[in-house]
Image (cartoon, rainbow, N blue to C red; front, side, top):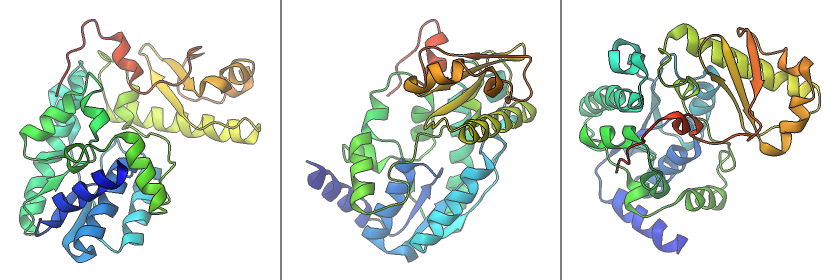
Length: 277
């Protein structure tokens, strides 16, 4: 099945004269970038990593290293999500404003480079994930998703990345920093920076204490309250260590979510999620 889907992906990409990949640094867009290089060669592929306060500095550096390893041109256009009131307001449709800003920057960039196709790393599971307003917004602005079109699931993507020995094959999910801020709490550059610093400090403290963790999120719940999500198996160890929670800077109160890390957990707080396809 994976071979069939990879063949479909190769055919989709191989017929393009060139492609601009919206490359966040994650496994989905990274595997798509590698697939594009395999189908077209590095000279006809451009990676574009949007730089804004919502992108952690570590992700930007890792994205640059990965693009360089593939030999592709790597563009770092700046996006200004914070200029969009809908993004700052941080209602349930925040991601739509973010993806609109992204594609509105990447499509003209592609045009300047002579590239008509702007593609994202959306996979087939993402289309079935329920509340994903950004997917619809990106499609409406002219980007498309080869992984999803080829029927590749998240497991398929990771399997392909391992087959191709990509260094990000087992990289944990790394959504943008804005996804850490509870809906209804306004997004600002200061809040994004505080979350980034808090996650880095907690991860470093846990490493120093010998508490291994894969997935870690510091959720800004408003009113200077942080909710920590880590791998479910690590929750008891973290909850028993107030010294580690004390290493989280910038918040008056720090709590541990007993349910552990859940991708998209902020959506659980929405009263009536709408399914976007």
